[in-house]
Amino acid sequence: MQKKYLLAPGPTAVPPEILLAMAQPMVHHRSKDFEPIVASVKEDLKWLFQTRQDVMILASSGTGGMESAIANVLSPGDRIIAINGGKFGERWVKMGQAYGLQVDEIKVEWGRAVDPGLIEQRLKQNPATKAVFVQASESSTGVAHDVKTLGSIVRNASGTVLVVDAVSAMGVFDLKTDEWGLDVVVTGSQKALMLPPGLAFVSLSEKAWGMAEKATLPKFYFNLKRERDNIRKNTTAYTPAISLIVGLQKAFELLKPEGLDGIFSRHGRLARATREAMAAIGLELFAKDSPSDALTAVKAPDAIDAEAIYKTVRDRYGITTAGGQDHLKGKVFRISHMGYADTFDVITAVAAVEMVLKGMGHPVTLGKGVAAAQTVLLKS
Ligand SMILES: Cc1ncc(COP(=O)(O)O)c(C=O)c1O
Image (cartoon, rainbow, N blue to C red; front, side):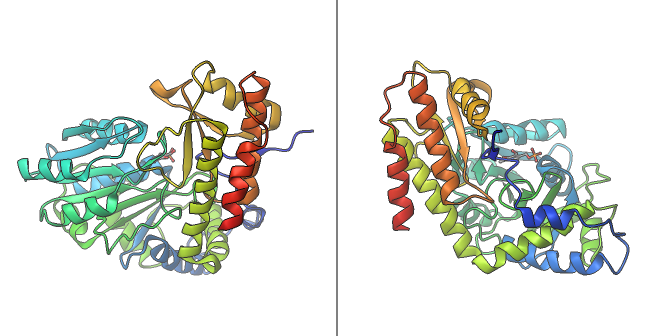
């Protein structure tokens, strides 16, 4: 018998309360059974997004939410800036190209955060830029980009919007959608919201809705204006992922008593504990200047394949973390501490990494990383 732990940066573990809520008999979506559920989650989504605007609910993975941002705000041939500091930044570039946009790609070294000053410069050079695309948390590298400063820069460019992929950031750390000028914000269900994959959520600022009025890129399923009209009537344009939305209502019942500050500080302490633990083991963190509190990307020791670490942690101890993507494959492994995660998830992950490294003959003092994590977790 092996107990399983899911500590990957998505999908994340789903609490039993949510699993049970989703196991209820199906209800019809155009009915009095379901409309009050949409009415409640749509208000809670505004709380989570820190926005007064509508938050649209799409039956899709996070990438569908990203695509809806492009298709609804832009027109063929529009010029955009796509910040590419990892696998998901690269996705903005590829999507923009697929939609026939002129993509000004800003490559950022993987493991580093973008310098907002660079974006300010680019916008001055190319004032016709219609949108800047970024990740709040780049899950492939464990880096958080400074979307607050980017928001303050893009706010000054009257014809440009800031589009933020917050798939692994929303509900992890502070993202003040309205106050910071985050014009389009996208997230998904399978990260900090503690749900299975299958829902995307998108908000648009007034500035972004203004652009959406004139945008001519083709769209049908991902028509956000149609979704906005429907969510205002407590429904969705097409058949929603009913059980996931029922689960979302339960997720908010669990999250709201903790409060946004409580949620952010829980993620902060788990992330700090993981980072300190890895340093105590003698491992280097991959995110150098701006680590995301959603996950920790760790460099494997030179002589050891990171794939072997995360696979042994999984196969021997039943703990699923993640390996590296693209050129980071074999170089880094990633431990998530977002969503349904708490003190002993971190301790478990750290202890397993120590045991696996020791088993591989790496010089590790067992318990050193665990003690470092405990010290952080006791203090905060
Ligand atoms: C930062 C980020 N953006 C986008 C996505 C894509 O979401 P999905 O896989 O749900 O389409 C992910 C998923 O891992 C992500 O972490």
